[in-house]
Length: 170
Image (cartoon, rainbow, N blue to C red; front, top):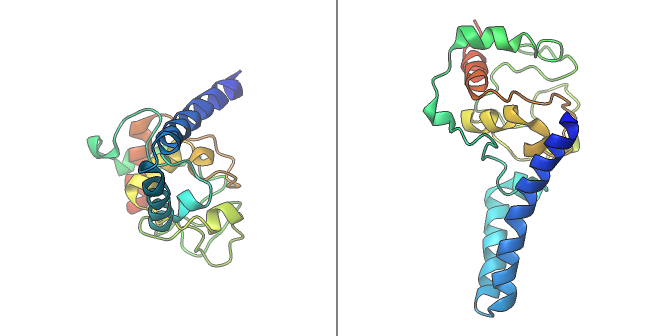
């Protein structure tokens, strides 16, 4: 049942963004040249979009902006306990998932010695705090076909707390 609900949310999020831009391009000849140029510009500016990620991949489904929250690193360390089965914050230590040491500001797929999925390795994402915030909500929505099977942290404050901890994992 929960899987069906996630699928319904993902389907609703994806279906709304594609149908509207296609119709104006088909009904108005002057708009047709402009639409492909916008798509090309977006793809060049955002490699993850070119790799098949949803156009709104950085918008969270809960609608809560990262900037509206203040992360608490101590609380984030507690939340991160559920991540420890796959990840650590020590540099150079990879488990099922790559080390998350220095994750903020790092390019996705760049930890030496870790075998990333092509989706993650080729995403072109730089892990800013805002990108991590969206990714942690639902990794599969942000990077389709990532091998990270974690369903995500739905609680916005917990995501902000984990990011605060990852910035300074002491």
